[in-house]
Length: 292
Image (cartoon, helix red, strand yellow):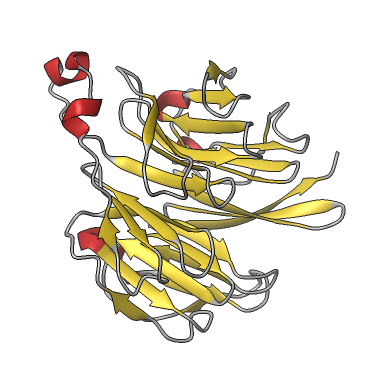
């Protein structure tokens, strides 16, 4: 099962997943080579230049400084499964995981520290009365070096305006879990989640509005690059935009039943189209979005 895909440039890309799955392409996805790194469950991968990080179960963090030729373990000092990682530059990064875990580094991962969040003061009495005392976090994204976003259970959206040092609640309640967040700029962004839950903000997260559902199935990833965008999810759901998210349309690929869940996507744009690499349960797909 593949959970993460990321490209270093228009030729070199990586796919990671459970049971130590690690695949590398040197030629834009024409061929993929299996790489042995560690026999653990990988959940996400992120590159900033030649520096890359993999996160996974048991607080796993792996780092490369040479495009993936060599990987070494970094000490997270936690056991929580980590679900997502994002770096603002070669030094500053954030990783998130289960039980409200947020880790921060300012030295490329040589050291990681847990960001202290008092969830008991944040979670409402309504949620506590429903047995919710902590929030699993699933995705982290930064629109610039200061403004960042994290999403998770109970429709949780957290926002940072200081590069991830502190986080405030933008939204939380008796709502479906959110699995992915993406911003086109500092004000315009989207979140997607369980059973087709799809929200948009145009004021930097002060207000969130429902977007007409593109599917009734759970949506696991939204990614934007310029005017190109992609959403993937359960039952082979794929939806695209080529107008910056104003409209969305389904993509039909030749998938065999039962249709797989799709967990991640990466967009590589060119002048007149964008290649989109999609991964999920036992699949790695390549599709194209044409310019409007």
